[in-house]
Image 1 (cartoon, rainbow, N blue to C red):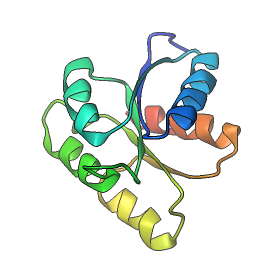
Image 2 (cartoon, rainbow, N blue to C red):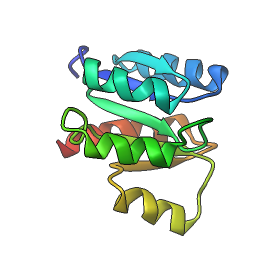
Image 3 (cartoon, rainbow, N blue to C red):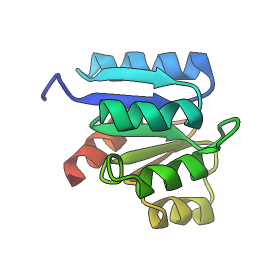
Length: 125
């Protein structure tokens, strides 16, 4: 795998964000971590990561609104987004895909599922 693939991790819980980043760095990815949608949008526009891992339950601009904004901006509309969430209903899953998510990983996740989700999202593009 290309070690230069960069992932933007948008997760408000620092421990979870650090754990996810560590696991994905072990897989050879570079990571950027932020705690809110407000931080994620300008960083995604500037850094143009290869994929974004997005929690839905964010303070301020929640994950749904962050996803909507990412999909409307020219610089970010094609970046694959993996949703990371404790919302695991069929309605939420379908809403995620309808709104442009590339993959959906429900918390608590198996680490293999997290890694698989990133690889699946990156394989789309």
